[in-house]
Image 1 (tube, helix red, strand yellow):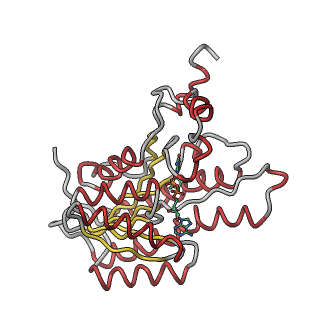
Image 2: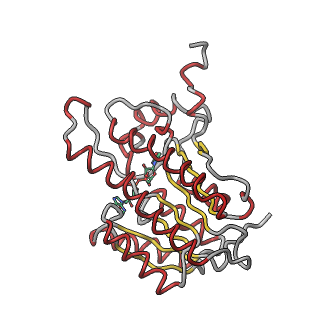
Length: 269
Ligand code: NAD
């Protein structure tokens, strides 16, 4: 069955690379107009390259610079998108960073940096999106829902991760943010869900796959025995953004080649 997101505007934060770029391409292939967000001038070229590929395939979109951890920038981004594209129908809260350190050595700056982008950024964008969804209301020509929010969480929403306390804490918190929003705005027909990727081949985790040894070691954690690709996540995002998933809200969907079946127990523990 073909899924159409025609005439819907989708903002994908942090989409000049990796999973965000993959999601932007997939949503565009389904007909959405995409906003490719990037955080600072140095990422503009990458954002343009993603948009060029989308335009080359007949898709529509714009690029937009905004640091999602800054309230004034997020508020302005939503105002500008609504002014230029009319509204926002789909928010994909994807931007995320890692600043790894052993817990005893983790600085407050490392802690704050990760929480600011991974959690506060998702809060700020979700808040502005919900304001716009409620202002606009349901447009049945586009969707039976008033709006869709997709949080990009992680398997580390439930798997503790030594050396990454800030990152794992941010992803655990996203689960409660997502479920609370789903509960608070369900009656308004706003759907809120999380995608929880396992290991996906992107710049955030290059050291986990850029040598044969690293990749072999990673694959011992993945029953399906391959690393994921941004398009795997893009396919799920399309489904969650569409009316095909209209009865799904408040859900964390794990997409991880079976990582959360805890492969190390496959021989009996
Ligand atoms: P990535 O580094 O390619 O993507 C992260 C993106 O966020 C980049 O484009 C970056 O420019 C952007 N970004 C960083 N700070 C920002 C800010 N302040 N404002 C706006 N954008 C900002 O890595 P990725 O793997 O594509 O990560 C995307 C999301 O997927 C992250 O939330 C990450 O935690 C999550 N994730 C990734 C994996 C994986 O294996 N790759 C697994 C689970 C979850």
